[in-house]
Length: 372
Image 1 (cartoon, rainbow, N blue to C red):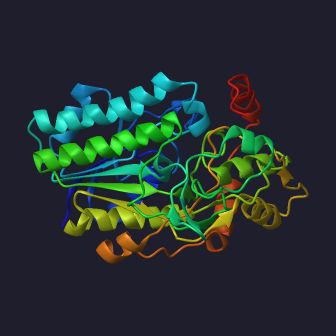
Image 2: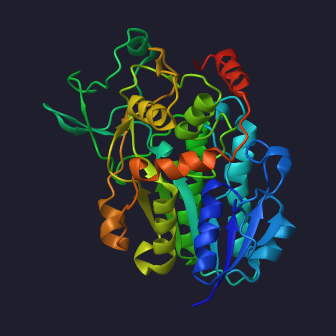
């Protein structure tokens, strides 16, 4: 059935792919996007933006505009957010104002003015977990805190049991794990999620929080030094520079295709089983950062090498992989894409993108703020 849908951040990496799918399914889609110059050069609309969607340039902090757009919207996908773990540690106001303040403004507009909204789905983040879940041979399932700086300076990378100090084995992280955020970005995403579910339950507005793991795919900005690691590595390789890998490169993440992220959003929209719940969205499969770098170098045919620095960044976690049992059971989600399957599409797309060599400034800022 045709619906009127509002997608905040709909001109972005994930949002634009979601808009495409919604258009294919026959919905009327409105995009609200600020066109942040950190993501969109010169604040211009990206060429891939779906022409069948209505585009409105603006910010979720603009109350009057938001009220106008919500009046006829039946479904809202809240994708708009400022992204960047390291940057969030020295641009606190910017992240809090946009991520927390923007979400608060959206929620306040929903509950204080008449509208047609029947469901709200928000983009949450695995970063809210902090470290992932682990298993100790002596103590069983454990939830360790961040590694101490002293340990990292000694180049002892693996996580130790907080009870017996035995080296731990990483296991998939379930939604039951306490959200132990360790960056302002992660805190802002955690707060977004908690505010949304709280207001949704209080006012009987079906809400869903999707905790995205490490998303990759076409349209991810190759010129934003605070975006996903695959895009950052591609920028460096295209500039004939080696991907920079911290620690020993064996830290693992769950890399999930943007197409699978879109699938999860569509399932959440259609199913009442999703209402008032949080779900991990990943693959359940670990990939080391070193593996990712070497895969990209191999497929690009580049002559650069993976630069494993054996240095560390403050606040980095060691392992976090999604347990996707809940979203599989409740919504029928099944990841259908892998890096190996999608990498050629990403590389072909990257050839159409002009990349800048602007990552030194980002690294300089991190060093200046004692984060590296």
